[in-house]
Length: 116
Length: 112
Image (cartoon, each protein chain N blue to C red):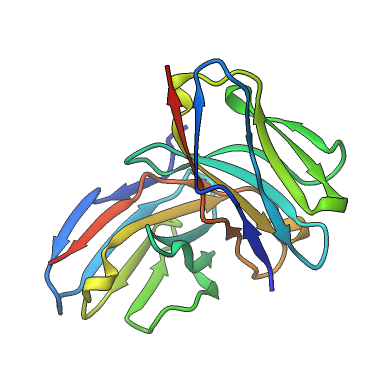
């Protein structure tokens, strides 16, 4: 069965420090991969996606993620965190081409706190 | 372009009642999916509609139902509400199957 694991429930970083959020997945084929961010009281906003091609993908708000097939990972990174980045981050996977009737599978999320 | 709109934003109901939530997708998006989000279970898929047809359904009891209209707007209904139905209900739309989903801000449902 498809699954997504975000090992870190809560991470605290200092403003200006670098950030890496981990995501590991279990899937039969190379899936489509996504990172979403959710601020308090809001819905989910798409940060970036990986469908195919270059394994390093750039997203909005200065985020990037790297797909590593050998490790079944899709970790999210940001070189310098801003206080406004404090939010919950979700990794999600879907079938190649997002085809058929298979919905996205989401990880449990990682809550990011940013301190001065 | 307007985003996904969910109404109402907040609802308070009591056990045994029923509730209807509404979702207006982004213009041109034909697929609408519903998710339940709780602190304990995270994001759980409820169902997806595409061109007025339910295309997929998650593992929820029959008390949870939905429909989609010809203008792609969707409604979700929960009957005989239970305390455990308290959650944030999120709607997401996408233009085609092979495109990412865009989420609304959700409806916060509280059951007393």
